[in-house]
Length: 67
Image 1 (cartoon, rainbow, N blue to C red):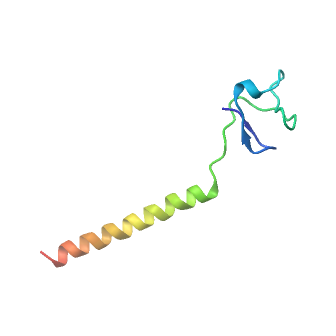
Image 2: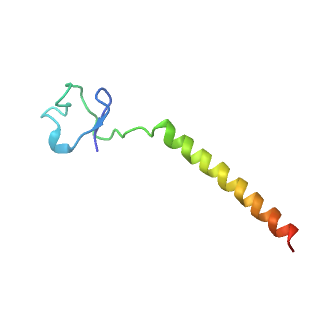
């Protein structure tokens, strides 16, 4: 799906003008361009991994102490 950097919006193929430009701002849109991954999504992935590692550590230590 085309992504317009100026408008920060995804565009449908039907929305593009004849020259492959954004209908709102007129910027040329590259067909293969993709929307960048937001920083907060990356942060949530890292936070989730850290949380799951901590919970795994807690589970392993609980099992060791209760055997």
